[in-house]
Length: 231
Image 1 (spheres, rainbow, N blue to C red):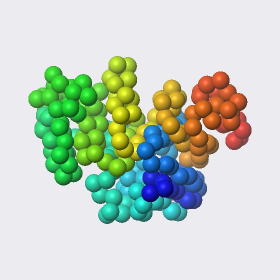
Image 2 (cartoon, helix red, strand yellow):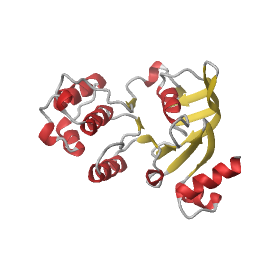
Image 3 (cartoon, rainbow, N blue to C red):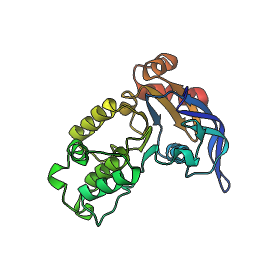
């Protein structure tokens, strides 16, 4: 497989609102790609299209199949912004359940330890804090050993240590990762960046190449320079 995601002229419209504008890009397997941009730039909409739950126009191929194809079921791990787990189950029960759904053998205790939820493993999700619930949701996306892991702002609300641990773990995974964020310092952790604003792709490159192309000392300045050029 030469690309993990291939987009050609992807457009998404809701009513009279044009959300994504003619996006074209290729993402390479085995990399961490960041979809970076402010709130309302279209990051979540693009992720939903890639996962297969958002209608689109154009051509969007994921894992060698059209986005939403039955062949991709069970091959994509998806973490939404809102925690998508069962509040009436414990942390351990949630991860065991999602692991069984995928048919993959997985040591949920390792995932619980990585998430920093060892002491909460037998608590119901309804009793956890918002940040802890998000960590359980991340674990649910991880346990199936997906070929593509799609994470929608997974580190929002997490303490710096947990955030660092999550990034270290993501780096150790043998899978392709697509992660969104509105925080530019997280872009520097990615191998590849899709920089979005108002549904348009301003840039697609590595963080280092983006700094050179935008003639900027840091990624915040690079983003501002690219906006000015686009205007």
